[in-house]
Amino acid sequence: MTTTNAKSIALKNNLNTNNVVRTERKRKSPMNPVHIFFFNAIVIVTVVWLLFEFVFAFVSAPNNDMSPNIKSGDLLMCYHLNEKVKAQDIVVVSKNSTQYVGRVVASAGDTVDITDNETLVINGNTVIENNVSGSTFRYEGFVNYPITLGQGEYFVLSDSREGGEDSRYYGAVTNKEIKGKVITVLRRNNF
Image 1 (tube, rainbow, N blue to C red):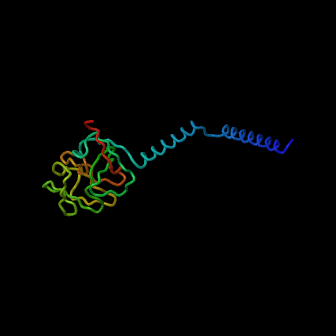
Image 2 (tube, rainbow, N blue to C red):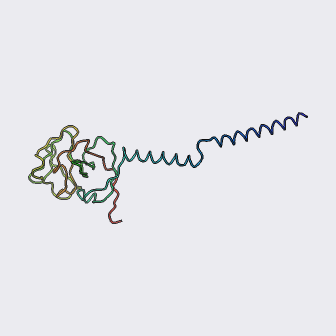
Image 3 (cartoon, rainbow, N blue to C red):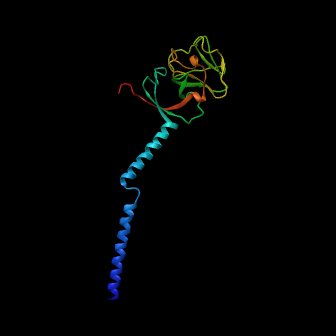
């Protein structure tokens, strides 16, 4: 046998060995394309679930207490991780097993008063609000005014002040009772 023939036979054997190894790798591969697709789908669904369980939430506005800015049935996207809310933030509150939506008007250390003239006064200053409808009057028999908020407490009012259920009705809310800050409103009415 010549050297060329020997090299040719060795090359053929090497190619056959490579084909066998490739075939064996494909056969032993733990993930074929269908498995990879389902694995990726499970990972994506898990990540989305975690995001909407612990970071974001969609909530339907329960009533017209925030009208005209938010109407009953509007879909609200909330951010759960915002531990520090400030005045004018719209929040979703869970109080006495009921869900409410309202606007933060005062926080820890602030003194809130609602005068006989139906005026909101915070820390001795009259608050002029452009985003509300109706007068801000007291609900008799629920909250004693003036009220000074403690650490981690907020006073939340609805934008529709006449008849809205808010801190005038259920008192100050705590950090734990605020379920999220509203970051987006999706109108579901009149689609």
